[in-house]
Length: 109
Image (cartoon, rainbow, N blue to C red; front, side, top):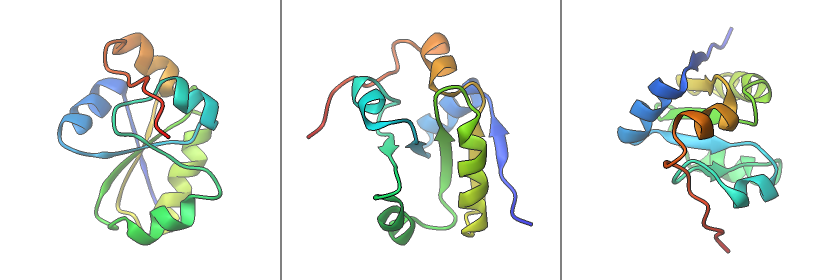
């Protein structure tokens, strides 16, 4: 059975400093309004390219709005063979509360 870990926003922040890959699974509009710096927005259309280009040993931290949907997404990534997968507890809502100055609100086109 594939496994993933849960991570607090504080531990996620430490992973951010170490170059972990952050995956935002919220809707595109929410991502464009604000997201964790360098986070990749993933939806059903982009998942295959991401999986093809990521290394199975990469540290991947997945977040959603409140930390619920990211649990299923983290399980999916673990099932794909990724060994360092985390679901961020509290989601982006908790991140904004804990790290309001560490959000990227630049819309990329």
